Length: 271
Image (cartoon, one colour):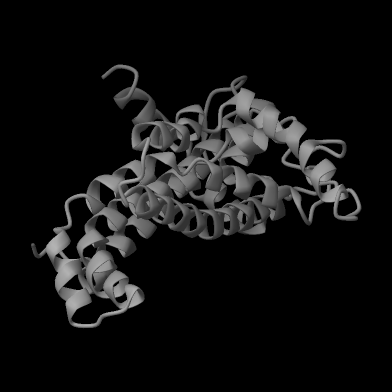
């Protein structure tokens, strides 16, 4: 309680103050919030976070569902395959994994070595603004293990007789997927979507480690949480950082609420 409730309300108070750890907090009202609209770095961090979220989340969920459907066919060695695909999600975006990713996508890394076999010139994946964010999106997609396991559990709950009856009626595989799998799996898709959205909006480690905490190159990997960290612990603008934190909370809550509102149009809870 002491380490959650007190910081929670303290940050809310500090969001309306000018505070840099050295002086006492000075009440300035909404100035921290209004200053955000004229802060180009903050607007860039929002852009990076939104692009990252709305590209990586659909791709990772699609990959998770695709692999889950393959594993659901009753292939041999299912526990082994499930463990292999789930392992990256356990490692997640840890410092060690991001450092390994930086090596793999380095100028002399594995990816460029592979592409070089096909005559493709080396690409500066981590130092070129056009590619830096792409490498982190690929990293996010690579860690699709958690939603995959949940999808697999959901697929195993769908009665086989539904597919058999549809096949007898002449339904194609695509029609069976669209009319049986997706509707019956929609509550699980909804759950995974909420989880992934919340996690993606709070991305920090990838941008911090990949480019040594700077959000480069050219702020192309400056995530919102990374810029919040820079303001709070590099610039010591604790008031501004607190305002940013509460703004992020509102953004996440808004998108979560919109997802819940939209659920009544596509989530099927009927047995």
